[in-house]
Length: 119
Image (cartoon, rainbow, N blue to C red; front, side, top):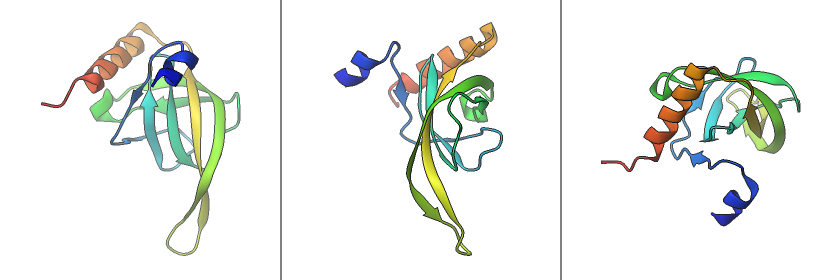
């Protein structure tokens, strides 16, 4: 845990259930962690470093679109689909770019909700 604090400007929240999210142009995106500064996602295919993208959070997480930029992308394996198709599985780090006040408020609400212990 201390490593995370040493390297990061803001704390991140790991999302144990890995909810699906959407990034236009990608299939099967899973949200791994989230912070006020960005997110880590797991997805099929590759993202280009520095490329702009939008992270669309699913309805239970506020159903909002957050503008971001790809800061890293690493291949972690391959996934075979029915029919023999094979796809690269990657993880990418996204840094949020200019958020509106409403987007920032939704992100704060979401992070506070995720940090609450389950009842």
